[in-house]
Image 1: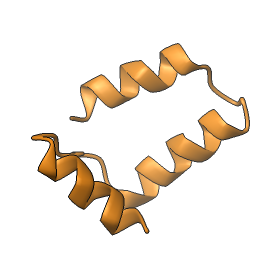
Image 2: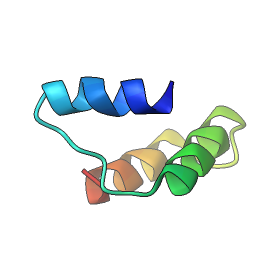
Image 3: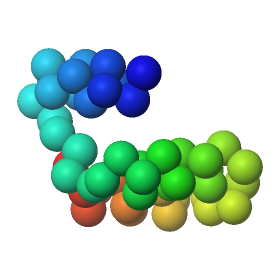
Image 4: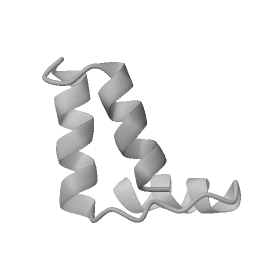
Length: 48
C-alpha cells in the first residue's frame, strides 16, 4: 500500500524523500492528533 501511494505521487511529479518508517510515523502522528495539520504540512513540504 505504501509503495502504491509513492507511485501515485510520482505520477504527479512529486517524490517523497523521507524514508518509509519516518513517513508512516508522521502519518500515524497526524491521524492520532499527536501533531497538527500545520506540522504535517511543514514536514511534507520539507520532504517532497
